[in-house]
Length: 170
Image (cartoon, rainbow, N blue to C red; front, side):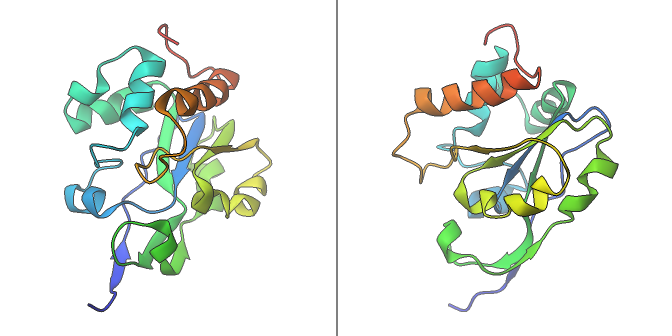
């Protein structure tokens, strides 16, 4: 099967965004659903639910996005498009970067960037150029099985706490 150019998802950002989590590129499941972190085994929504004390996984996707934005969190990917078979980052070919330098303009309250996993963090030089703190978070992907949920949650809690994005439950 030949690879074809895949296009990523639109950014989830607004003027309230203080922290942006950048993934690499949406999984096959996420692209089909046109939703960030749609794979049921991905820990992204479960981590946010634990940090904020909200049942995000039970909410319809549009409501999850509203909650995310209301907490000052934005979500996007480093890649706008790429060729890839399957969902593994190691299969990404001919990737095209998103407009990462434009994040400051899109998000006037932006305080920091957090890369969700190693492939995203490979582009930290671009996000560091924004003059903001840049973090490498453990990937929420099911492929990152070497980190337990609790260990991932602790790392995410640390970064979110530094930028005032923790809920009462954290």
